[in-house]
Length: 253
Ligand SMILES: NC(=O)C1=CN([C@@H]2O[C@H](COP(=O)(O)OP(=O)(O)OC[C@H]3O[C@@H](n4cnc5c(N)ncnc54)[C@H](OP(=O)(O)O)[C@@H]3O)[C@@H](O)[C@H]2O)C=CC1
Ligand SMILES: O=C(O)C1=N[C@H](C(=O)O)C[C@H](O)C1
Image 1 (cartoon, rainbow, N blue to C red):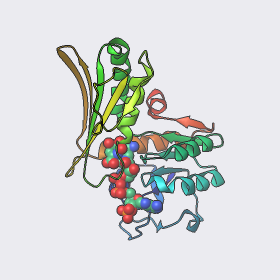
Image 2 (cartoon, helix red, strand yellow; image 1 turned 135 degrees about the horizontal axis):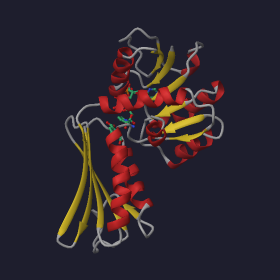
Image 3 (cartoon, rainbow, N blue to C red; image 1 turned 45 degrees about the vertical axis):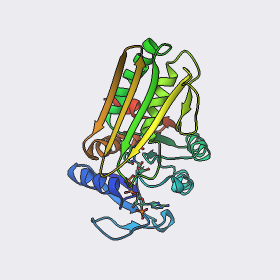
């Protein structure tokens, strides 16, 4: 039986993960961690990692970037693989995540859907063909409860485009104080927040008299949850420390 520890278990994603895990054979949520500890399923929920003395094989994290240090301290001390799905990390928190990967297997992705991971590959191809002649703009839309902007996915997609451009791109998040024409080396990233939008990402390649738009729409949180549970299954059997992402999971199929 694969025993999963779920950090952020009482949140929107935590509850969908709990449903997916109960629908699958051979796995269970052994413990949940969250600020909110009201019981909603049959696993115990603790506020702090230190309160749980039992076993688990892998940790899934959909919580808050503020928890990074405590999450990684816990995983390192117990030599547990971790699947980090939380977004909005600072540069220091990202350094901490990379440092942890020296001693434990660490999976991190701003988006757990297969669609966005395929889109990243399409973007690399598009940027390598169109990159020096087309302006790249990214627009992301999410629900009004989201804490971070731009989304982790928007940054991940910008990184995919930037990796295939023939120049070093500058990410521009806010144009409202600019009074100049758009330089060619930018990737513009804009965030929209409203209602219950699950997640929408559009990447525009804007050229002379034509626009190519590559767009992904998540219609439910299940697409992220299924990816996270698949990643946890994969990570639970990793013996090598290091950084992993969705491409590793897809390649293992
Ligand atoms: N990689 C991916 O594919 C996806 C990533 N995400 C990311 O996952 C994260 C969670 O998203 P979502 O479930 O919508 O958010 P929620 O706010 O619904 O859930 C987060 C949960 O963690 C709790 N929490 C917040 N801070 C702490 C803390 N310091 N210690 C312990 N628990 C804490 C929250 O409590 P409280 O409500 O009281 O703050 C809440 O119960 C976000 O960063 C989001 O961007 C989301 C979807 C997909
Ligand atoms: O907070 C969310 O909801 C989501 N967050 C992730 C992100 O920041 O990209 C992934 C998804 O789009 C939903």
